[in-house]
Image 1 (cartoon, one colour):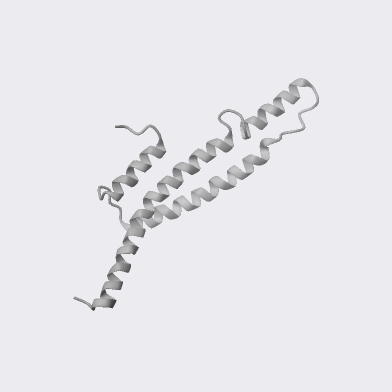
Image 2 (spheres, rainbow, N blue to C red):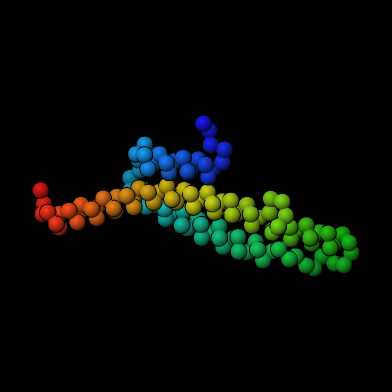
Length: 125
């Protein structure tokens, strides 16, 4: 079955990681996680800036100027395929990507912690 959206694709990879069918070096996963964090910050900054564009003014008092201002406002916020929503869809995908990458180094940290606890309780073998 082919995923219908990027979110479904990354959710499928998350499932594959959970099932042990997808492997990634924890160090590489950390780098990918960091890249996702930086990209998310950039996307969120741009999304916040786009929200400020939701009330365009200064196009004059003629009907055409008012209509043009409304059109520009809706391209930023609230209209079909507006920038705020498009950026949110990118944020959602990158968040799903980041969840997959985190599985690899969080799992490695958990195993390390379990091993350390076992050694602490039972001594080295």
